[in-house]
Length: 177
Image (cartoon, rainbow, N blue to C red; front, side, top):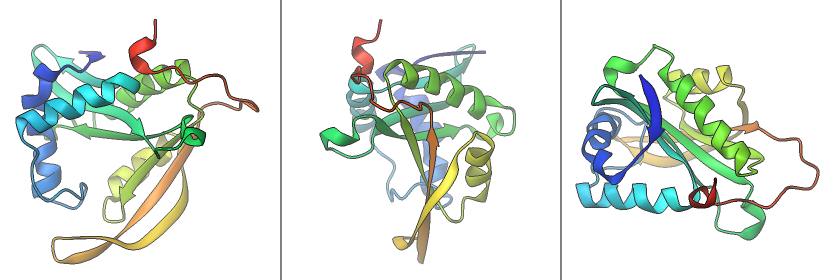
C-alpha cells in the first residue's frame, strides 16, 4: 500500500468509493452521484491549489483525502477544509489516519495554519476519528441541511497545524517542489 497524488484517471474508483456516502446515509449532503466528467473536473480544480491524495493497494484505491478552499477571501488562504472517504473494505484499518497525516504534511509545506472539517451530526464515527486525529469541535449549526426526510445539524471541527504569529506566504499545491 502507498499514498500518491490523485489523477483524473482515478475518478471511476473514487466515485465508487464516494457513491455509498451519497446514496446510503447523510455523510454527504449531495443528493446525486456526480458524473464521471464532473468528478474529473473536481480533481483537477482542487489539485491546482490543494492536495488530493489516494491510498492504493495494487491497482485498487482504498480511500482518498483532499483539502479545498474554506472560504473565497484572501484572509482565509491559510485555512482549508478537508475530507476523507474510504471504501467499505478499508474502514477501521488506519488508512484514514495515514491519508490525513500525509495530507497534513503537504498542508504544512503550503504554510496552512488551520484545518477545518465539517461533519454531519449523524456521523459519530467521523467525529470520533477527527477527535482522535487532534481536531476539536468549535461549532454546531442546527438544521443546516435536509436529507433523507430529516433536518441535520453539522459540526465544525478544527485543528491547528502551525503556531505561526505571522503566516508565511501560501504556496499553491501545483507550485510545491
